[in-house]
Each structure stands twice: as C-alpha cells, then as structure tokens.
Length: 271
Length: 286
Image (cartoon, rainbow over all chains, first blue to last red; front, side, top):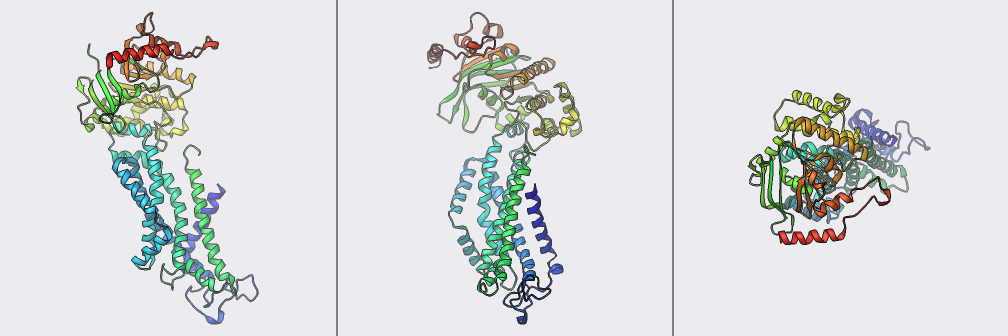
C-alpha cells in the first residue's frame, strides 16, 4: 500500500511540476550567465540564494532545467509507453484469441523483432527518422510493443480457455464482442502493470537518446542531456551530474514500484 | 421412441484422419428425462456434450454419424446457425464454477447475458427473471448477489448462480458437465438435490455427465456408460443397479468409494473386466 502511495505521489508531483513548469521554475532554464557558472547547491559554501541546486557550466539554473526536463521525460513516457501498449496489446489480444495463423504470424514477428538489440535499434531508427521528440516516441513504440504483445498474448490464451468465454460464445456474442467484453477486462490489469514498467523504461531510453544527442534539440533541457553535460564537469561540479541522475533514478524507481503496487491491488481475488 | 436429443453412430476425430476419440456413439434423451453419461476420465463424456453444444475444441471434428436435436440435424448446421440454436434452446451447467464466471463482471450481467443477447429481452425484465431464478435456487439475498463479483461468492454459491443462469432462459435442454466435481462433498449433495428439484419443477430434459455412479443412482432415469470413446451399455437406473448389468458397469459401481467399509473403501476396476471389455469392443467396432 505504502509503495503505491509513495511512488504514485512522486509521479503526481513530477507531473504537476512538468505541467506548471513555467510557474514553478525559479529561472529561465535556458538563460545563461557566465558570472554565475558552476554555483554549488544551497547547502554548500558559496551558494547563491535563488539557485537551489546550483548552476551548470554555462550558468544555467539546474533546478529549472530539471523541472523542464521532466516535461520531455513524461511526454515520452505517456506517449511512447501508451503507443507501445496499444500496438502490442492489440496484436497480443488478436494472436492469443484467434490463434491459428494469426498467432503464428504475430509470434514470428515478435521473435524477429526481439532479436534486434533495442538501444541500437532505437539509435538507428532515430537516425533514419531524424532527431526530435516525435522520432523518439515513434522509435520507442515501434521497438517496445513486443513487451506487451508477448505477455498479453499469453494472458489472452489463458483467459480464452476459461469456461466463461465458451459460454459467452454460446449465448451468441460475436467473437470480437467476446474478446472485448469477456477477455479484455481480465487482461487489462496486466496491461496497466506492464504500462507502468514500460514508462520507466521509456524514461531511460529517452535519457540515453538525449545523452547521445539524438532526442530533442540540444537547446531544450532533458535529463539525458544534463547528464551528458555534467559528465564533462564531474571533477569541478559534481551536482550538475548528480541532480539529473537522482531525478532519473527516482522516476524510474517510482514507475516500477507503482507497477508492482498496481499488480497487487488489481488482482480481483486478493482485494 | 423419439427423444429430444438423438445421437446416432457419432464419431469424433482429431484432425481429418487422426484417432477417433468418440466412436459409434448412440444415445437418446427423452423429453423430461435426466440422462446420465458416465465413464472414467478420458472416456469422452464431456466431448459428447461439447459436440452437441458446438464447442468442440479446434481440430476436433464430427467425422460420422448424426446429432438430432428436436428433429433438427445439428452436424449439418453451419457454425453460426448452430450457435444461435444452442443459444436459444440449450443451456450448459459447467464443471468448474471458478472458471465459468468472468471474474471482472458482476453476476447480474452474467446471468442475463443469454436473455438479453440471444432472446432479446429488455434488461429490466431480464434482471427480474434473474432475481426470481436466484430465489428458486435458494440464494438468500438475490438482489445483493446480483450486484456481487464472483470472488465474493463461495464455490457452492457460484454453482447455484450457474444453475440459475442455465434455467433462467427456460431452455429445452440442459447439458450438465460434471457440475459437482469441483465442489466439496457436503456442497455436492446440496447441489445435486437442487438440480433435481429444478429439473422436476421445469421438466427440462438433461444430459448429466458424471464419473460418479452414486450421482447416477440419485438423479438419472437412464444412463449411458462409456469406455474409451465407445458405448458400453445404455439402460435404466434399475437395470444398471440391478442384478445383471454389464460387468464393466458393475465394476464402476464397485469402484465408488464406500464410507461404510473403510478398510476396503477404494476398489479399482479389475484388470480382467477391462480386458474383456476391450476384446468385446474390438469385436463390435473393429
């Protein structure tokens, strides 16, 4: 229970910060001031009031950049995670429910897809599609649908063998009606749990892509971009590196813990 | 004699030329009768019910014979027409009440499915009927039960709900597929009594699949004994439990656990009976 609330709380906080970034952020995340470069965070000596987490090598406020970076992270998590979930679940449901050649076709496709190393595949796709937020989202959805398809297919097969699916067919529901009314509600908890885990993964992938400068343009603050910049200053200003890493860590942890909590909560027999 | 269900020399195969899991099965269920279908695990009892309801698993097909329901040949019907006919006139009481109810839907929707989707009743009338039928199966608080999810009910309650769902649409025929197997012994007794009472009140013809000779004795007018997909014999309850049933039937009766002689409560079917039966089936079915 505590797990669900703690992780959910962090995610809500993050979402609010991202939505209201212009109101919350103490500074313009892009404003440079070379007189104020590499200021330490507030608890260290030499900190400047108003720059709570210090500034980076160009004198930009780290906290403001973190808050704006949350926007990119969450947009990618919701859109890329959501698209992967929809694409993978639809294919998994059809394969698991229809069986036969549909199942074989989807199964082979999943096998082929999963034989590509995901991060290299993402870098390749973004390189082909061109950098930018929409390319990142498309790349993640196109790669990660297999996570959903595999699990949803197995779960659908198990559910389809239940007697209530047979009786729904007997009372005259169409096959797609049966799938929608009888199978989907029972597979949905699995999809939601997977979605939460997937969102954590997309945040990491986005960070990786922005670390290698393949995500949004380097003007916009992203956590991956901040880590890349911080890396060069690691001997002079550790906080520039640590702040985005902590944000990334907490967010990914929150998504995975939220998924675990949901799993316990959504099991109808356990509640 | 014409029954409501007439199965004549039915064979079901795995694949087009695969082994036959039912061979040359004939049986007839008279209107208003409870017809037992008894055999060991794997004898093909449930497959007969599934064939009638058009629920054979993928890959299994009727290869020979006929299944006539109320004069209509079911094996010749296209899948869609068969489904419609079954939906309107035949109900099934399933084996396992745990998997027969959808865990994420309330009872109300699941009882009224058939009334609303197949028979086209409006929802309010269907709900009233559902409540009435739940009353009939002695569920104490029908209104509350209708609002419940399956996991909120006990196994026995769920089986009552499924019996109510089967009788609610006043079907002409009910296939009960081992409806007490998944329940504990005391609940089994109550459920059997309930099924008998409901059947007597509605006069619905029933095919009652079971592996328990005791159930046949309590419930059935006549019964068909199956072994390895073939009929051993069909007879009235008096004949099957009388002085000279088929030796295999006698052995099955002997194999029923007896609590009055604990030192000898479990008797397997003797090897020589099985051998004799196999030889007999070889001779008649080839």
